[in-house]
Image (cartoon, rainbow, N blue to C red; front, side, top):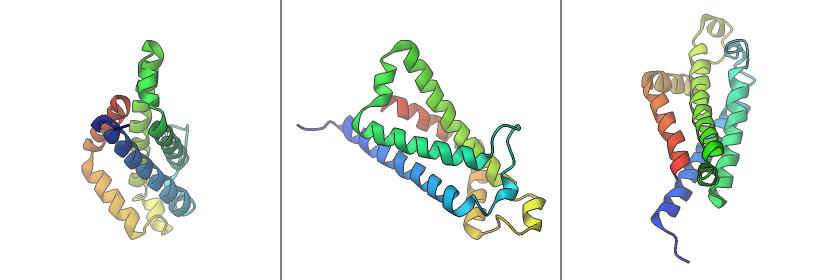
Length: 152
């Protein structure tokens, strides 16, 4: 059985999606979480950014893994109301994950973190500079990725 170009693109996209989410999970869970409590204050009094980032990167990895074998997005999209809620939900979660990463990284430059010399390692500063420099375009990229999750 020969696979179509669309099926190959689907597999490549979700492998990349899984890799990105696994990288985010490992980096925040094992390298950042315990060292950067100064930047992990609750957003809107609801949730700490690192907890959200770690949980949803794990969920993203699992969704990517499932989508390698079962096209969950297309299956949900075939059901009118369920598909709409699923697709909008995935898009919102992708954008919120990027938002939480931006919020967390912007807090690493606060006086509170600088005074106690936490969150000041070089890779974190580079990530902060890149993500802050991208600004609003990173939300556009996240939205495009979320839409691609639905169509692929």
